[in-house]
Image: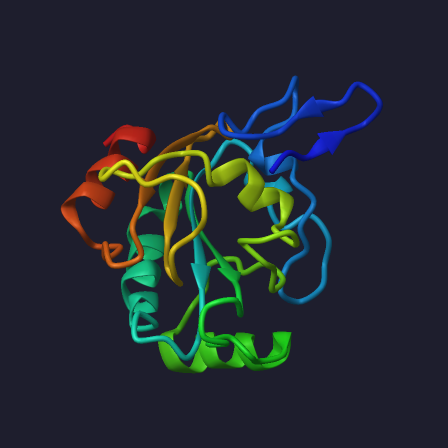
Length: 182
């Protein structure tokens, strides 16, 4: 799926850049409704993860928060992207999602509004992410909750990790460290 920006019909897809636009220029609100959830992260390496509160993989929030704590001071951030497309495992309102994440897992990393990551309603953010293959060569549709995309400080997608790859997996840690210069 393609997303067109402006009259020049440039496409944001795959490489995550169009002219001067990057992932960080994608219009998406924060979970609290404030605009521009990604704009403040320009120049920061990010791990973008579609999340859900009622999934067997939900305990990954613990490792995601550990990544935020470990690397947050080094121009890194996790970004949680709630999605209810997989088994309706994220049915809550923004307030319910925020309360669950904070109370259950102590989440401090940014969360976006709830969006669709697949299908005709796929958000522009995921239109830019899904063409990147993971280590097994899978690209295209998101397979399940907790699929992860590592985006460099310039807004380029550099790695994709399967939902079952835990955030503390050595491959995830090595990819983050390669981007932040550890």
